Length: 453
Image 1: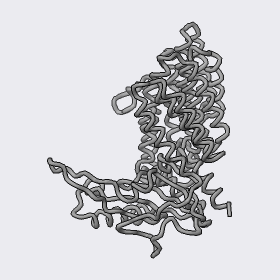
Image 2: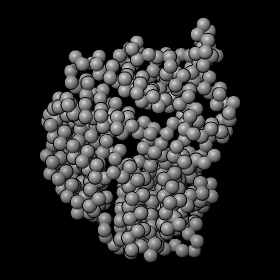
Image 3: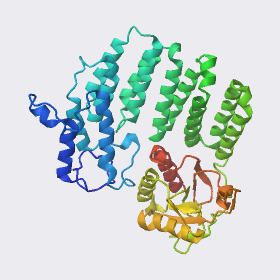
Image 4: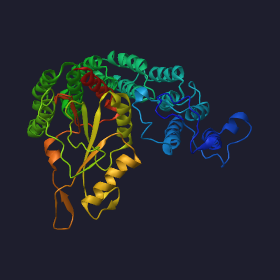
């Protein structure tokens, strides 16, 4: 079984679940015996018999998917929604559960749940019919109610596996026709699409959607603008990312200038806090296209193969902070990036620090903790990277608790990840780790850094 393939609907259940276990899961999930023999009532042996609404079936589908992947290598199979898919066993069982319901007779309050359930099963036409009936039923409701349902539908379409982008754009177009009364939901909907487009590295389209979201936010009432200031801030950061990828440092900083002028007057009492937040983002993006990043410092190195100078001169280097060993989504992204660009010279370094414990156990010394962390990342997870671990300076509070101080790397590298080209120029920097959601952006900037001579 190849876990690196993005299309998983063709894979057999396999693995630790086993073929027989998969059959039992399907039977239990859907009451298949009842479906085949309508005269036979669902009895207590069917643990899913209590699921009598589409919403309950949808939740069961989510749990079944998590159970399916639980015993497989999740550090190799975590994808962003755009490139993800639902395992065949989940689709099959969920379809049987969905077959209990009919669009024409389901309660209006369950129609949106039924539409989302159909997304799990790959029955997009039925999903659209369920939403159409819901919007027809709500036709006489205030625009704000219809706008809320459309916005939720947009987000579910973008979060589906894989994402239904064309359907999301269609729903967003319907949302836009409702105008100023739904300015909040229009802003959120366009912002959601912009974030999705960033995740697939369609930066120009992401910029257009982010600007549409900001324009809608300006049509909100003043109370809503103040209440949703954080969401508007996040939209500006999406815009900053999109223009930073396509046009570089100066364009990103210009967006931050506009954000500061627009947002700071909305909450005068919080201006100092927001000024500091924006200053932090400015410091981050100001590093683009600059040189002089200090070498990575480490108390102990692992997997460096005798070369402890990072970033490496003459080589494209990806430097990433990890704490507590990182997490599976990041591991999956790092594996795919290395598989694609390692042979072309990409070098990955994981930077970490000691915290007085490893996983859930206290460690007797920083050396033991560093050894445990290095062994976990390189030998257990087999991540394709060098590991640099710093012993954190610390003190104790009066009650005995340990208080760590910033390490050398934390003071020098005020971000989560950075890409440095072979000439020592910073090509991309992020405070949001290297994850499936931003994998396409990292992929694009790495490829450009490697191609540029």
